[in-house]
Length: 149
Image 1 (cartoon, one colour):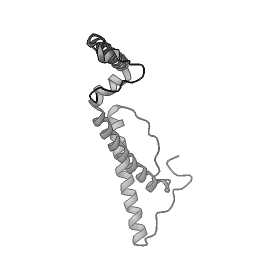
Image 2: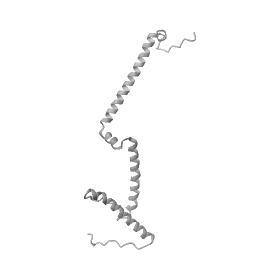
Image 3: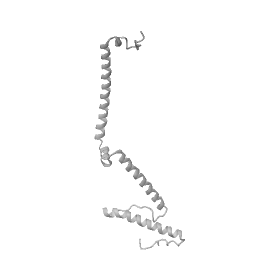
Image 4: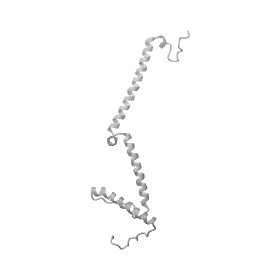
């Protein structure tokens, strides 16, 4: 009759005719699926344990709180670096304004000295800009046998 399903090769007519064999087959399929789930859970647990034991990762997560916060911080640092790079290019051509490493004596000096240097560099840059705009005569170069030696 037309209500009979076509049997696939290897499955045999036994599953269709024997309800007990069909139940056993379905039970094996369910067991295989649960075995796959157990393997997946085991793999994920291993990954979590590995991540929890990674001190560098844990320190980073404590510092930033989340990956999104870390990415936002990285973006802010990229913008700041671009601004600093532009500033360095602006003053790089002038030997007086060029960036130099400053020895730090104390933490207070280490915090105040870069701000003071930046303010002085800005003042010198503005003074040189005014000299260029108004065609004033630039100051003479320092004497080679001056007091600073």
